[in-house]
Length: 498
Image (tube, rainbow, N blue to C red; front, side, top):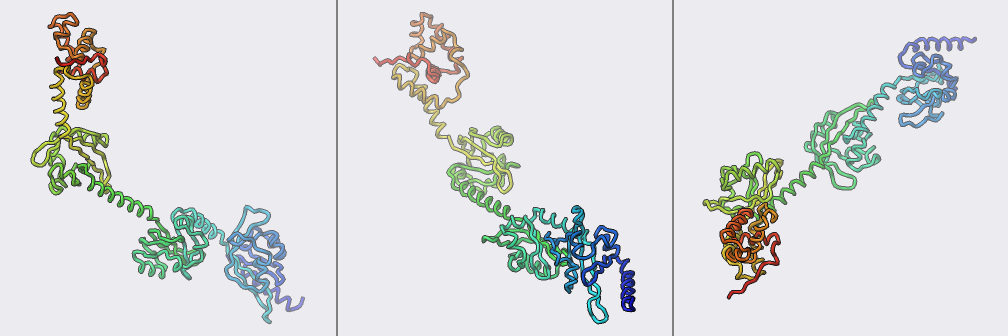
């Protein structure tokens, strides 16, 4: 063996002794890519115990270990790290996933850099690959990637060195309508996530410093035009040993739309409340204090808003009966609404009017309130009472009227007497039914006594019993009761005045 060869072998042994104990993996190869040696760390990173298991050269190594980039693209043979260093390429941070072809369920992630040792004449003498185990780092990055993509909160990540977006999750794409290619690679100046931010100067300063950006409102421009109201915040983080900023967002657009809809709804309610000709009052459900009254209410009662707003219904005393007032609000508290309750309402100056009140529960500015709608029926009640009195008077002698007129009068009277006594025609005895039928024919007590061949006192007793059972107090009322039920329609006799 020549002295040069001996010296060369001695130097290699010394080099192997120096690097054998390093925690980083080291592989040595000839210029022709023949694998010479690997330290224990490099062997462990491949799951083998002897250098022969790595293969004799790059080609055999590629047969035993499949290499992929982190984007899952497989490496061609010429792109294997040993091939690249043999071709004279220098690299310092190549990350690959290494999988044994004999066991695809195992894999490691290596970060590699190259080194070429030269001889005294400067010619390449030995190829060196220095490996570090990045499996744990890659696993953590993969977990972050999955978490980032699965997080429903919209987010993007930009690299601070050039302020370009390098990651975007599905939440951001769904919120904005952008696709991934419209975001990745663009700068924060092109897709400005801080546009119209409340404290944009502070946000820009923090971004340039790589410091936390506090939450603030901003307008996010959309790809199809328009914008979306969001809350944006920035959090610095390290990715692949690069300083980055994670922007996260909260979509405020649904809240803004809800607020606009609520405001428009309240405006429509306010307009209808003011313009409706029906007297209307709004009071708080909690303490029954008057919140608002409309013009129609002021017209009918004589009060003005300053006299009522802020005061409790009970203190105003505009409902004439305290018992009716208590019943109204007790029903509202239990059922939430009231439909057509009769109330006597006291106007300013103590005049009392008859009203029908309907009420419902409404929410105004997040506060439960009662909406009371009133209809003045004073004139109608007065007219009905006068009509009933007139009917009572003229029907004292039904024989003076035609059958048609009697039916119309009976029907008119029934309008003002909607609550019929809870009694049936069959509740009367046969004799009482006969008496009622003759009353409906317009016969007086003496004529009934003659027709039925009964004593006048007996007829009067039967008539009194009929009145009592029917809940009436006059012949006309008894006739109305019978006509309301379609009784004796064919027996009503028409008499002409002699």
